[in-house]
Amino acid sequence: MKLGSRCILQPSFRAYSTVRRRTRTRFAPSPTGPFHVGGLRTALVNFLLARRDGGDFILRIEDTDQSRCSVDALKGIFDGLDWAGMTPDEGPVTGGLYGSYVQSERSEIYRKYADHLLQTGRAYRCFCSHERLEILKNEQRRSGEKVRYDNRCRHLSNREIELNLSQNLPYVLRFKMLPSGTVFRDLVFGEINFPNADYEGDPVIMKSDGLPVYHLANVVDDHLMEISHVVRGSEWITSIPKHLQLYAAFDWHPPAFAHLPLMLSSSGRKFSKRHVEQESVALVESLRREGHLPSALLTWLSATGGLLDFAPSIDKKHESGTWTPAKRVEEMLHLFDLSSLNRHHARVDPELLQVCGRAHFDRLIEEAFSRRSLRRPTIVEYLRDYLNTYPPIDDDCSQLMDLINDEERLIQVLARLKGRIGRLSDLTSVSSAFGFLWKSPNPEIVKSSLSGSIAIYEAILMTAVKLERSEELSEDDLRALLQSVNKLSGLPKAEFLTSLRICLTGSDHGMPIHELVQLLTPMEAAKRIREAGKVIEK
Image (cartoon, rainbow, N blue to C red; front, top):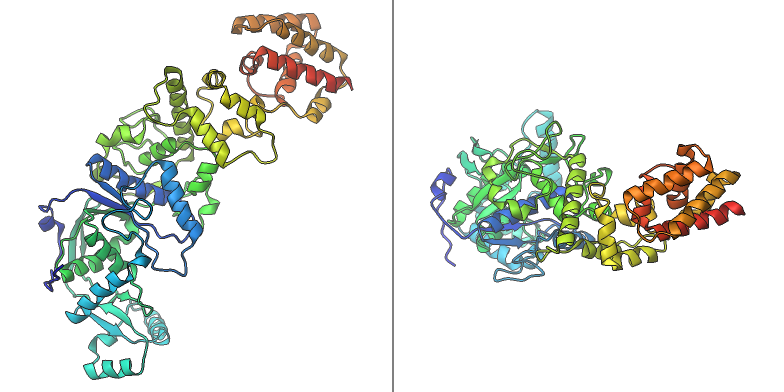
């Protein structure tokens, strides 16, 4: 590949807009901490753009800062993308024609291009010690100046450089920034102007250990991998002058840039890898463990900041507009437009995530009834996979597995819970509102709540007898049965129904009794009532 030395003093995407390429986007995370929803949202935007245009979605791992990278963080990225259904077309696992897709394995490539900049006079060796740089920063702060490198080593003579090299003094490579301004058009924020491109001084592009910094590796990789659109967080906007001057120094056309507004927590704080553990909806792994459906999570993320043309706010009905909580992102690709993104930082709405979760569960249930899986995982497959990954702790889940393996029965149960379930854990956690479906009540709770009343004991046993004589009961039949027993028992209605609810679920509040019996089946309900009777009798 031939490298030129032409420099563009004022890079502008207006000139570049006529260059047409196949759409190739990349998600390029650094594995330095837990994978959080801000990263997943960036991946989603890149994924949607590639899928909308029939292009390629690439995963690249930016791990040049080896001291901060971890295997667990890398695994979290791979697992999170796989779980979300955003399989890269190219990447460390998938492979591809432009590999390696791990930056720490591309050191020789970066050195080649860094050497080119050195030979053409656009880079230089900087021998400044850490101590000198710290003194410089402190002096600038004291005098109220902008903290920046003073470009001292840019002016070293060849003799001084050779002397330093002969003494084996460590050095970094710095890129010579030109003082001209930079104007570029961002696909989200529109035209952005930097009047003075070198306001930070000459940036480091290669560290003393021979590894590149983000700026060089990013530009080289995006060019060599033929990335057409760089979509990343708005915190990188200030790096644009460096990147555009690097493209110009190599005589390369830059890609189109789109900088996404930041995602903020519900309290208005920026998500960061240091603080995500404090947020209920911040970590992808936590959301998986809580049982959120990946399709619901992506629909929720698509509403954050207006990715899909319409983002409902708290004071609007969630069903209005072109975006709806039940739609899957692949069904709304035609709505995806980077220019329609909200330019303001977006606060997450945990309430909306629950709305999306219930809507997607209801849709899965409807598809199970109509057998319209559309080559997607079914509700049964989601539950089985979730239990294999996150089995209940210290609980016998054999009854739950029996329920899940009886697909017809499970679908009937879920149909009665439409609009009430937003997470898989709502079904699989014994502490959830629907844990009673597969876990009998704690005998101690039953005993402490119901012991000492002969009337209650007789009433619940009478109910068990009547249920055992009826294999199938309609809602009206159940209402009539319960009313009949209640009348015969002479107990106040509230006391009678609360007693039955404790026998069936271990709780004194919850769903109406006739719905509980239909969910459990009359025979299971009768069995639990008799077990409760034995506890009370002791």
